[in-house]
Length: 547
Image (cartoon, rainbow, N blue to C red; front, side):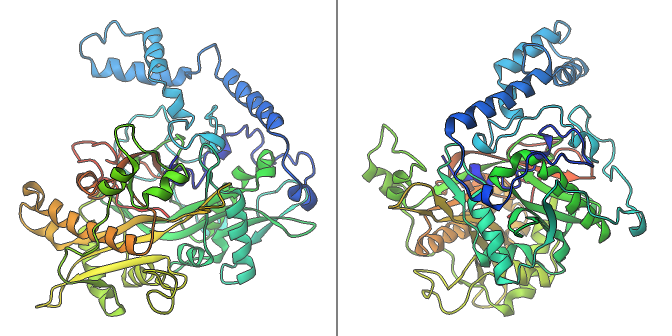
């Protein structure tokens, strides 16, 4: 089981669909205090009974014996008949339903084909998302790109916080305060994303949270928490950070929504919908009315879908923690030999990024990202933050082989030795996971490919001739060398940007993790992620890397 499955549901944004009957007045339910939260979990048997009951209730709500919602059947039937083709006249509701069941489409709809496991949420009737300005699943492609609901003046935005269940209160988190930073770290470390078998859980460091939640122009009010009123224990969290986003020809400010986390013992409290509504209110108060977020499950409505790939590096450890297995046709020794990472760079002029490089990197990044359909727009301040603020302190090696103390990001540039021009750069970040119930190897060290760019993209015919592919294989291949020297166990990448053509040759293996991208209050036609869309090659629709 791969940590990509953890990554997919990092936002766990589907939580609101869990039987939200009274959105503005969430039920308080039974009282849960700090003592209850600290107490041991209920038995596995009781948990299974409770989950089964919830699933049964959700399926019953879909109507009939089939799990396929009628609206989905109608949508597929209309699309088939509209497109015509051989056999379309004979197609009816029964044949569509049978085909969808054979395809196990509900596994995708419910997230079983994505994150699955304990983070899986039933799609139900999307009572919450049906009330939100997002494209619904039964809508066709938009005629034009644009907002769904118009922006409002500040005085028309709700001024008071949404009501919480009894015994809970809102809290604004100050990530600069070491105590509050640790509270967020503890909450995420113990209650955030786990994989299907509860083997891995993300381990966000204090330095990571500082880097991820404090980009230029961030708003502390967008770091929203919920505490137990009696003892002030932090039991839920959601964050937003500002970003300028270009979607095709439109540029607008958005909130990047992330880290939706509710304490495991409070999942029945319906806190997630209220958290989303409250952070949305805070975002609106700052004059922003669009957002971007990701999830491993399907909710209304993905604008793109990407898939994880993994470059295995520390094979013995990955096999020991059951991240991967030795194929029947291969021995462990041969698997290690096949996946051996080179020890030397292939790109001439490669070095670590320095402060003096910010202007050139910003210019190269801006030009390179124009080649994709949905991208962040970074000024020099954002480039400085994203690629330099997480490099840690001290010298390389002080934090372990290939690492500074507290290092989160690695960014390297390629400098032409004659002209001193920056011709390429790459970056990746560290996001380890706790390996649950493994004392020998308690931490999985995972690197994630971040942003990169190359001047080769602007050479006439570079893509058609394979010149760009060759250059990126060299540059990103050197990123693997850096990560291997820093003792990372695995290097992860998504099918976005220019990744797709180079993954196989760099020995990335296909992962089972799916990541859906969503836009709030914005309509646009589907963007090319793991598959092509509208004549656009796979990956080239998405240029946003979500943390």
